[in-house]
Structures are given as C-alpha cells and as structure tokens.
Amino acid sequence: MTATDTHRAVDAIFRIESAKLIAGLTRMVRDVGLAEDLAQDALVAALETWPKSGVPDNPAAWLMATAKHRAIDRLRRSKLLERKHEELGRDLEARQNADASDLDAAIDDDVGDDLLRLVFTACHPILTPEARVALTLRLLGGLTAEEIARAFLVPESTVAQRIVRAKRTLAEARVPFEVPRGAELAARLSSVLEVIYLIFNEGYSATAGDDWMRPALCGDALRLGRILAELASSEPEVHGLVALMEIQSSRAAARVDASGAPVLLLDQDRGRWDQLLIGRGLAALERAEKLSGVLGPYGLQAAIAACHARSRTGAETDWKRIAALYEVLARLAPSPVVELNRAVAVSMAFGPAAGLEIVDALTSEPTLGAYHLLPSVRGDLLAKLRRLKEARVEFERAAALTRNGREREMLLDRAAACARGSELPEPR
Amino acid sequence: MRFMMLVIPKGYEKAAPGTAPEAESVAAMMKYNESLQKAGVLLAVDGLHPPSMGVRVSFPGGKPKVTDGPFTEAKEVLGGYWMIQVKSKEEAIEWAKRCPGSENEVIEVRQVQEMSDFPADVQKAAAGFAEMQQQSGQRRRPLP
Image (cartoon, rainbow over all chains, first blue to last red; front, side, top):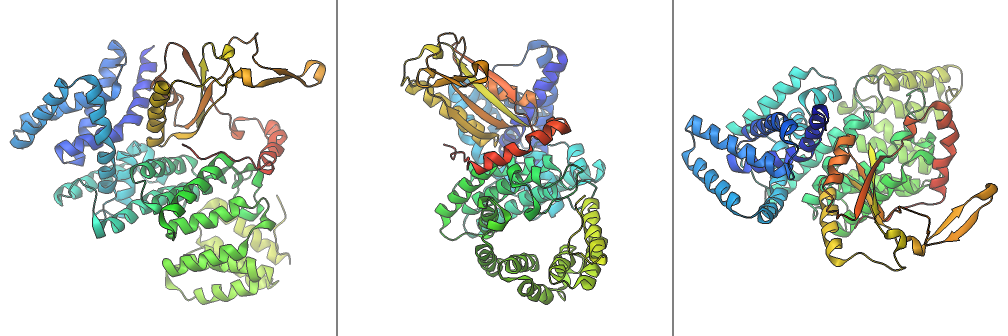
C-alpha cells in the first residue's frame, strides 16, 4: 500500500468512525467541541502513524484509545476537572484490562446510545436552524466545513463560524448529553427530523444556484435518516421521514432532463424511477404504519409519495386518495404550503376550478408572499382553464421569485407559451 | 455511489443442493449486516442457493441453451451479495474488510454503473430498460 492509498484508507475509516468516536468522547468529556478536537487529534495521529505501521486490525479501537490518551493529556495539562480526569483514567484502565472481545462488546453497546445523544445535541433547539444543520453534517455526517459550504453555497468561513458558535452555545448553556425523555422527547425529536429533512430538501430542490438538485446532500440526509431509524426504531415518524426521503430519492434520475432542466412529476419517465429505493421507501412506510396506526406529518407525506410511486403512469394516479391524505395532513399540521399542495391534488381529482378556489384563498396569505410556487401553481391552473393572460402574469411572477436558475427558465417558457396562446411550452 | 460486494465461497461450485451455511457463521454475518444497516449504508443483501440448484442459460449460435447445475467447469461461483451506498471506493473496501470472512471466502468489490456513467448514445439505448424493470413490477423484498 502506498502512502496515498493509506491516506485514502484513513479518510474512509474516519468517515465511518468519526461520529461514533465523537459521540463516545462527548460522553466522557461532556463537551462536543472538545470531543471533536480529540477525534481530529486521533485522525492526525493515524495519518502520521499508519503509513509507517500499516492500518491496525481494529482501527476503530485504535482511534478511540488514541483520542482517550489525548483527552487525559489535555486534562492533565489544563489541570482542570480533576474528578473527570480520574474517572477517565479508571475507565481507560478498566477497558485496557478487559480482553479484546469484551472491549468490542462494550463499545458496541454504548455506541448506539451515545450516537443518539449526539444527534439530539447537534439538533438542540437552543441553536439556530442553520447551526443545527451545519453541526449535524459536521459531527454526524462527517463532512468538512468546506464540503458543507459547497453544498449550501455559502463561504467556508461562514460555516466554520457557525460550527464554532454552535459548540460554544451548547457549552455555555451546559446542554446535557442525553436523550430527552417524556413530553420533551416529541418536541426534540421533531427538531431532529426537521434538520434531516432540511438537509434533504436543500439537496432535492436547491433553493439557490444553477443546479436543480445536489444529489450528494440528499445522500447525506438519507444516510442520517437510515442511521436514526436504527437508533430510534420505535419512533414511527422516523420511519415516515425515511420513507419520504427514499421515495423522493427514487425519482432523482427522472427529475432532470439531459440538459439539466427540471422535469415535473407527471412528465417524468417513470421507468427511470429507482425501484430499489421505492421498495425500501414502501417498507419504511409500512414500518411507520405498523408502529403508529395513525400516521404523523412525515408518514402522511410518505403515503402521498407512495401513491405516486405505486402508479405506473401519471394517468393511473389515485388523486382522490392523495387529496384525502392532504386533507388529513392539513388538519394535523396546517400550513399554507400544505394547503397549496392540497389544491394541486384537488385540481387533479376534481378539476382545475376546484383547485383554483383553494389557491385563490391563499393569495392573501402573508407567509406565501415570496413563495414562487404559489403563482406557479396558480398559473398552471389558470392555463388549464384557458385563462392564458392571467396565467402568463402568474408564471412571470413566479419566475421573478424563484432563486433557482433552472426553474426560472422553465417558468419563463410557460409564460412565453401562454403569450403564444398555448397552455404548454413546446418540448425542447 | 453504489457498490456490490460479491461473495465468492471456495467450493460452492460443488456444493450439494440444499447446502446451507452453518448457524455460527450466519450469526456472525447477521451481526455484520446489522453494522452495515446501523451505519446507514446497506441497501440490499441476499444469499444465493448453490449452483447445483440453478441452471445456466448460454447462447451457442445465438440460441438459448439451458444447462442444469452444478457447473463442473466453473472455478468460482457467487454465494451472495451486499449492495451498499457509500461515498468512495475506499469506503466500500473498508466495509468489505470488516466482513467476518473465513479463509474460504473472497469478496469482490464492484461499483454499480449509473446511467450517468455512460456516453449519451448508450444512455439513449438504455432508456427503455429501466421502464421494463418497472413494468415487470420488480420489487425488492424488505431488508431483514
């Protein structure tokens, strides 16, 4: 193995191990920031040592032992937290004395709990949503600040600052490293799910930039969701969210055409939907249904996505069922965006006029003032009703509001088609 | 990116019909599968019955010909596979190294081709294939 090969192997191992490492270290030192520094120290040590000595048989245990030694060194040097130091020493000694298989078992047993604690800490409501996203991708996704910055199209220094500040906020507030219990759990879990879905959505329909999708980010969110589904397997909404992301991801290849322009759901070549992901999504949805009986907001959205996934053609879509599911969703988690989606489903089930009625009730909604999909949907319904002049105005308004370049082009095409007296743009 | 980790167990080409792995190795494999699942990288996993229960379809002169297993000429046969989703080939290799394999097993790590890996003319030619997969109602069974 050359030095470059070993470096690549170290990177791969670190990607697999870093979250578990940081989680285990946080339990010991009770400080996420310090734990991350220690994990980085261990990584640097591996990069120095392994090219010479070879990759150890159990790299995870090597990294953890190295990080713990560093922890003790640091604590000694700073002469802080004397009690913690002793605990740490005892812990380390006990583990060193135990034989190797016991050690593995002990790590395995603790790791799940620690990881879940780390998830709840990174997604703590005390942090801003941006900080939660950055910290989650950093600590649990193993992404560098540079990778996060690239994914969200912000300067690297912004992301680095966000992460530093987030860690300081957690330390100053003395946020306990624990899984919340009882009534608090539901609210905290929904913050975790929100963070994962935010990451997914930024990848699925980028809010800015020239690419319609950033698939790597979807992949990161999906991986986090799948990990969470194992850590919190009794929570139906976790499986609901995973189902939603799996099914939405299944359409990734069909959502852009050869030139990179977006293709809307009903125009997609369903043959390009990924059946492996659809199967996984339907299985996750079934798990959510079995656990809950009554689906939560993510489960309902997954059930809607599943309606599309099960239809072989757009024409076969069970729009009445989708409209009914949106109605339940609107009652459970009312929001103007859900209402707008319901309008689309109602228009497909009962005609554009019925949908337009719902959309018109939303035009005075202040939170949708800058939301490009409101005029986009309204334009579509007006075009179907052959009210082309009004439709054109709506498409142009939507084009002016969207921050995604690809979407803007598509909306302007539709506006131009209305001006020509046609409902739909000519195929490119 | 997706990778297949293909298991090639030595001697499986000669295994009798109904040959099943030993309980002990199954337990170790289940633990390994679990570690893949917990890491969020496992997409699918299956084991395959021995070739003595299968057939080979060849095409001498362009015509299909069915031969019952076992296939005496075969040096290596598949015993099963994992499909994983990871960020690099190195990560796939690292996962393969963690498999509780014995002297008897080889794991071949192969990247799954994506449509975007192909040149435009191949993509066009392949466009109908995915649709066919869909229409055949192909569904993967849920994971263990």
